[in-house]
Image (cartoon, rainbow, N blue to C red; front, top):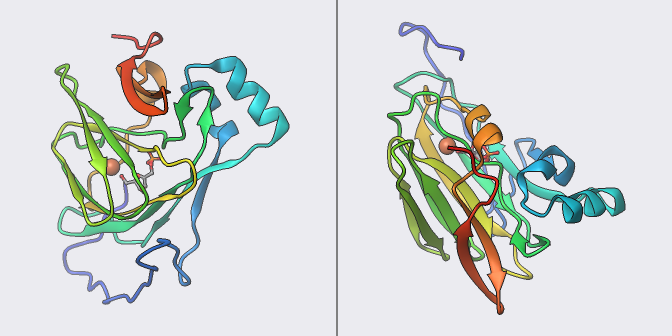
Length: 197
Ligand SMILES: O=P(O)(O)OC[C@H]1O[C@](O)(CO)[C@@H](O)[C@@H]1O
Ligand SMILES: [Fe+2]
């Protein structure tokens, strides 16, 4: 985690992003293809087959490049594309914050989906993303965005304390307790058979 000394002046920086697509013209996106997270989906055979056929872009995000200090506010936009692996909707990898006691706010710009959250104490929650709705991810909750639309990208704006950091390892090892799958054309949260306590 890089820090900026208190006496260093951070210049006001102008960035841009489109309020519907989330795309920025001044920043480069960070992109994650299916191969980078294929082992996170429940249907491993379907994931491998899809990667072999077309290693699609599952999501991308724009990090607006704020210093990683506690007084700063990291922010950007996140775009999760529509699609499924087997019956499980496309999603982000998801993470805890390294500094567990830090929250995050997401605001849905377009599309439809869920923010799936869980804490180390065993609680889990899912909050729906619809345009104009904000989801507050409380301190201590891992979070993952899920796109449930068949056609539209799920686009959100996010902001969190600059020093929060990302802990990907815990979710990479344990997974989330719940999966979001399509059942009779509707999203449903079911137990993740591969979840490790
Ligand atoms: O960090 P993940 O789980 O790959 O998902 C990416 C999203 O989460 C963030 O790290 C913010 O929590 C963003 O940079 C991005 O929107
Ligand atoms: Fe986060």
